[in-house]
Image 1 (cartoon, rainbow, N blue to C red):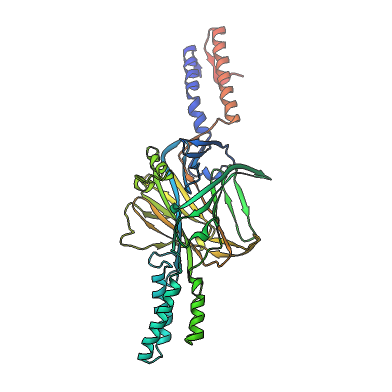
Image 2 (cartoon, rainbow, N blue to C red):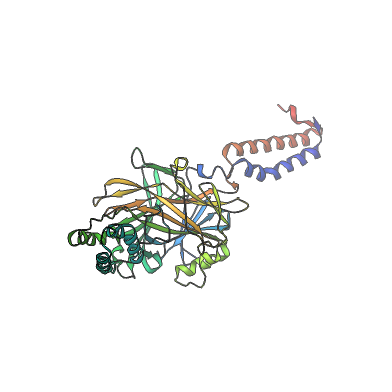
Length: 454
């Protein structure tokens, strides 16, 4: 192939202009590879915008209130902040499971609902064998006594917004082959009657991993957290159950009324209420208002979340279904045995964050030793451009419960990265070859056969 001096110069210029494009296409991370990244450098900004603590990596940026006032987390793809994913820890709800094994708002563990269920399912069947007149009087006596015990019930809902929280950390942790940033949200005070027992007993222990790590608890329970993901240890230490307060009432029925009634304690549970939303960067002030306890706007009112993929099932959230529907159960079957994933979704599907959790939680005794595991269920409902998610824990008595949700990016647009050493060497070599060819043309004043250059 014979080419002249001008053509060689044109070829050289074209190659030089194409270097950035070659570099970008030669070393990228696409939607299927973001969770395969093994390690990420982390830059920390302790007071971003005067409100947030910020972790920034080449892949993901994560922020949370630097004051620790609210357990709220926002994250996005570092090179594309057009969609910001939000997780807000709303509160805890004690609920009853006589009809469903998961949270349904028709069955809170409040005094009226408990009274109705006890009467319908346990007391009335026992009274059926008594004569009518005696049955009426006994029913009246029992109900009056029951009301005295029900007065001592605490509210089934503990809203985290009615509590004060304390943030400890963040601080880097490196041991063996594990590397992460550690920080904790601890519930310090509760401004609601009969719920003070929760003070200092609820924690959200957080680990932001900059290196992919597999955490092994035992032979049957382990999970992998990828670099750039945030893992929570949600901890409840010695919850005081409303249903436990009925033990003396049941004993009274047996002793003084000769009614042998057994109310199984496992017919209750505790649901962690989480709101999942997505906003644009220009609406981040709504989240900042909440952190500063100013509620003119909230992330829910500004949310533009369209749908969620719940274990790969597409579910639209634009409509508020809390007015005329009830919570739907998340199926936890063999296909999703390792973890349950709730993924933000939109029409384009180009960027997607997620929240996921393993379908089991640990129970610990007072010395911190694992004494067993309980199965975790979940339910959800669309609430108007955001999703209400309820992670449900069955009755765990006086033990401490510990569960492990995780948030992160499941996919992302192509991420340009630094050109690898091999590609850089090839590009430099090609440039040198052309430079030599051009020099030869100038010296020899004749066409050069580039293909046959030794």
